[in-house]
Image 1 (cartoon, rainbow, N blue to C red):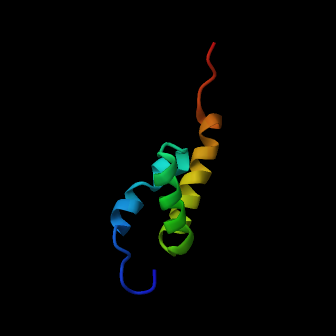
Image 2: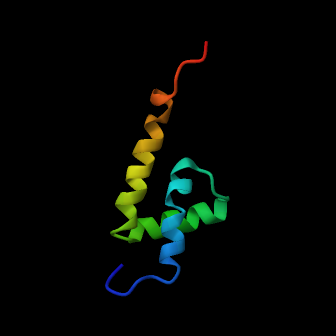
Amino acid sequence: MSGAPVPGHDELRESLADAALGALAADEQARVEAHAASCPACGPELAAYRATAARLPEAAPALD
């Protein structure tokens, strides 16, 4: 983003966590990822969500 907010930015930002989990429809996933790739605010936020999502299996308790 260079100065002016991108139309739909807030909506896209709200979808970052779902995108990190792969929980969006393919077209919406692509839209969010494309936005994050060009947005200096959303790119790092999506990366942080993905890093957290990658560690979720480590945090889950073992099932006996």
